[in-house]
Amino acid sequence: MLRLLYTIYAALVFLVIMLLIFPLCILAAFLGRIKGGNVIYLLCTVWADIWFALTGIRVQKSFTAPFDKEKKYILIANHISYLDIPVMVKVFRKPMRALGKVEMGKIPVFGFIYKRAIVTVDRKSAEGRARSIRILRSVINKGISIFVFPEGTFNETRRPLKDFYNGAFKLALETQTPIRPVLFLDTYDRMPYTKRLSLNPGKCRVVFLDEVPVAGWGVRDHEKLKQTVFALMEQKLMEYNVSWIRPESPEN
Image (cartoon, helix red, strand yellow):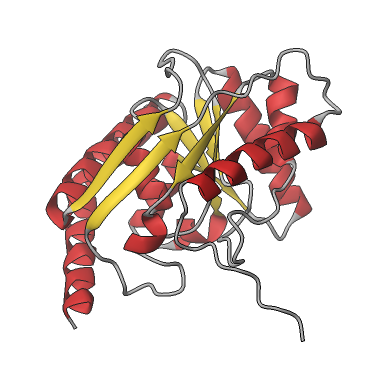
């Protein structure tokens, strides 16, 4: 019961902050897709700062190597919770565009902000996926980092990661943009994807791993690049002993 009440409280705080920044997002939209989108992303970081402070969720970020704030990256992260995007907005303090589900853009009020801060993708449509890649390429060419869940959706396996899609890695090679893997270690514990009304306070660690450079890689090396990043992230998640990893059930 306490967890349900806490989740309701957190949702109400989320909505109140959203309604407060919404008029500013409308004004920012008049600045255009790039400049306006950057302003809206900044507003979203303020939103995240307030929400996490009022809900008692402590976001902690660390780096295994120095982070160049002036450099553009393709940020690649594991996807295990509804909290993953809010946490990323909290820790990444420069203009960024994430790749997100097109369905979220249909939510009243929230959808207006979402579609201007996120590059939406319809994964059911080949044309929709191709359009999203074109937009992401344009964003990178303007010096803005992008954020992608290469698993595509929640990892519902018992493994550290589910198989990656190719798109982000092809894009990295085409645009010669280095990849920066990111690990969400505790968002599953704060809010499992299986239970939307199960939010609970506590720590949320985010680890930025070493940059994976792409200089010298050919455009056809996306499979090798994908497997390199996958192996690195999988190894680190196992080292951190994240809670969703479970032994596979023995076959009968």
